[in-house]
Length: 406
Length: 228
Image (cartoon, rainbow over all chains, first blue to last red; front, side, top):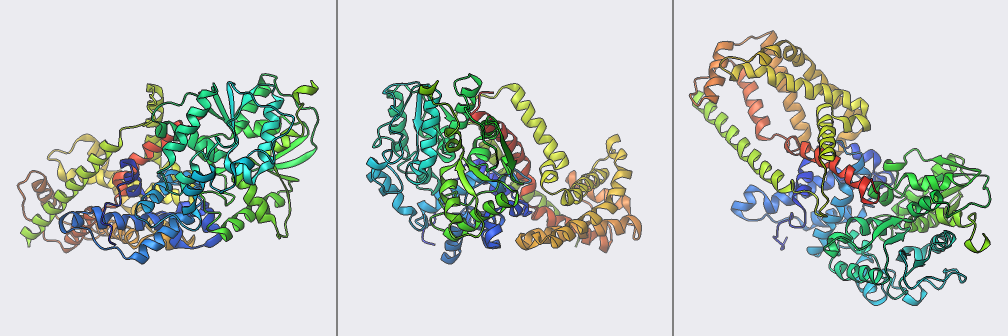
């Protein structure tokens, strides 16, 4: 190891205590989706923490302080990097941790440390900052195609409005039925809403944050916050769990002060619209569906009841639950920016979700995350078990009464 | 030999205090909450602290995820607590009433502790969790088992001179050390205890802090996107 900087530099004092507090009990393993599909102890949370403790001892231990930092086997660092990036950061390990370690935040922080050392990110991830700088999105797709392929022609957005809508890159480029559904439902509430022009609606920063590439974050956040502020936005609505997570938890820290607007997930906005009578369902759906909680929506920001309230507002719809749901939901495999690097894992995890949904006898699998939507659909290609996959707003858009028909 | 034992005892205790101080400094550094500037009301703080106290006292988080392991772990931790309480009679000139109260429960706990440890190890081996565990963890578990076993042997089959034990222990805490009693079993017991103090798993010092932090975080999560 040529880099002799402290391994604890990027970690907060609280995270250093968390590293210390792991009892190595292994309870988290029963909930780790990566373990379920790989059964590889080397990439388990206790193994990662154990190894990181060794690194900390090598650079910060009492011996290191007196005799200088120890050389770490580069192969060990390489294995550690792979283990940290193979994680989907779903946070199920932290939720089941008998001590309560906040792993959904710990693993991304370790990635930041690895990026500083030139060990991460992996696969196509290093291309993301450049792509975002060029096109505004991590997929390197033209900004002109951000809304055009899916945005409903009949709907006009306001220049200025209290409500702002952020589509998000994954929704706009990879899960278009989902964002189309969002816009149709927003329109159906009759409340004017505004959006940034496609070249201005840049990445929220989550893919960079989650891969440990923090440098461009401040610029992106400032640009977006100022953009919505100039349009008079008081509430910013978004359907992507990863986007709402970084917006509500990290944007204030990155922006340096309280945001000039409130962040709400679209299901929260819709639930409110139902309560206020601004949204009405015009027909029933006689189906049995199963709802999957996205990790960053449930474990991330505690939006658990609202999606269920939305589904229960559709007459005739019967809603099933996965064995693991709510705060304990199982990752569908697409989280943590690992899906493009560890593709086989992601597909295997997606198929676990499909298996359970089929076994429970659901007619449809309801998702509310664009990454889940894209990956679980991909996991179903060529798979013997098939189920209809629908986004929650995609479904609602088919049954709500549009404003012009009232 | 006596001098070696006394010096080793003081050295281990001193190292433990250094470690404890370093941990305490880190706790203080980490105790600065809420970088977002969220202001906690008294009720939220009381609720979080009460919840964390319950988590620590009954290992509630473990109960939720693994009731079978929990029963063994809880008996082990409760037994260890009672045994430590019982041992305070050696370190106090006049044992306070609560230490005297703890004598019988502590004696019973002496039997329960090795059983609980064997049960924990059995559960972990049966469920395959042990393969994810570190060797240091296993060694600590075995060490505590033998501490319990040697202690049990002294309180049942091979009694030691308790007056001499008390003089030695009291001598250590009052910095006027006297020779340890002539008992091989006691020396083995003491050596194992010193080994445990030296290599005490760091989670013992850190986990309670994290448990409290987790309860604060749970409330933060509920509030981050909800008006509550």
